[in-house]
Length: 254
Image 1 (cartoon, rainbow, N blue to C red):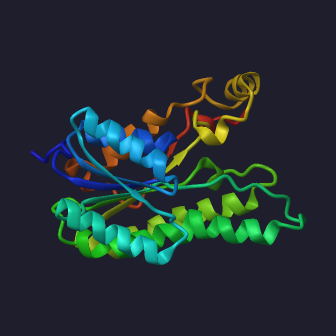
Image 2 (cartoon, one colour):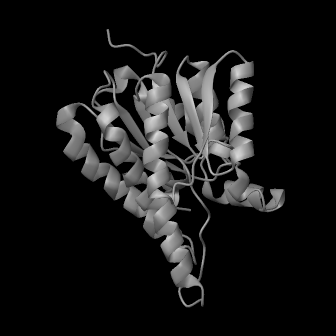
């Protein structure tokens, strides 16, 4: 029977300092994986890794700006050297990027959105590939958003980048499938993270009741557990998928 354990696997998580990234690092660490926590927030990501080590897990932190191509290459190599390889890549790092199409700063927001939300993901995959090809259960999970499936007003930079992630996922699943490397995408819906922190509790509740089948916001660990499921050795026949983790948001017509 195919294993349902990631114990001993090496996983690199981007954006691991908070929110879904931190939850992902915690879930994998608790399952016995060696976790490379990366984030641009140097102090915060070190605190995450230190906390995991304090709890008896295997983790280490790297400061990484995913908009920096050279830093990506160096970090992936450092992770593989430290842990003896790389089995799982979770492309989670992201930013919020909303702007009206006719705003003066639109081009800058567009450029930054694509650099961090889309281009960085393919760069990380390319850097990781030589190591993933040596793994017995190589997995790539790209984090997109339900904004890739149904957009909100004034979020075209974000929606376009996230839709690009779903296309990248499908294309690389087809390309890398013959090598046994699975590539999947998760589209979180309304989740309680730093990006939604500024929304009032009243507005969150109203939105959740109106839009989601479960009538609530999701928790970061609920996304993290779907990521884990896609990375199990037993998930070897799942690739090219885009899975909403959205409390039924995309299922509702009204």
